[in-house]
Amino acid sequence: MTIKFTSLLAGVLLFAACSQNNLVDTSLAPGVAIPLFDGSSLGDWKPLAMDYLGDIVIKDGAIILGRGGFFTGVTWTGPLLTMNYEMELDAKRIEGRDFFCGLTFPFGETFASLIIGGWGGYTTGVSSINGVDASENGTADAVMFEDNVWYHIRLRVSHNRIEAWVDDKNIVDFDTTGKHIGLRGDVDASEPLSIMTYNTTGAVKNIRMTKLAE
Image (cartoon, rainbow, N blue to C red; front, side):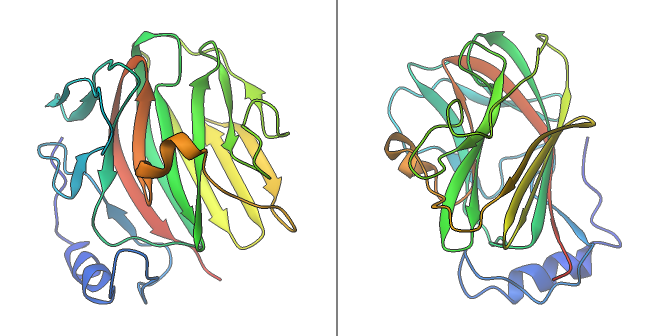
């Protein structure tokens, strides 16, 4: 699928022009979805700066993240929002038994990861909360994922809340007040925005970001 830059073109240009660096909110109007992947090239996505990555290729309008020694992923190097936004993408597991979508995202001045299909292939949640992984920090849920089935992932980040959905299932609804939100130490290289797999082959497509109203 090729993204058509027609009515969104002006918004995309404004999105880029108003950013002084990769972590600055813009004056883009709320509700305008910005595509982050055009289905045919990596564009501003670069291979994750880690060792033992699997192959990263584009096929049938999706980014295929091949099974590596540990993590395989891509990192966004363009402008992005850091608060009051939604991220959406479609993801599927091709083979493996760990997470096929690890979405590292900004939360204000810090970062966290939404894990889809970790810890045996079914655990979801946010890592880390107060230094504790998704599987143990109260955001954990269990979803049975089938291989080669596309799932729609949606993440909403606001000042006091992180929410996430797999298709229509709400898997995270977490009040962040008074909590420390941060990354596991072994994925610091995924800042500020990355999509990863762990010892698993996965695919992602239809990646976009939308600014929310305050």
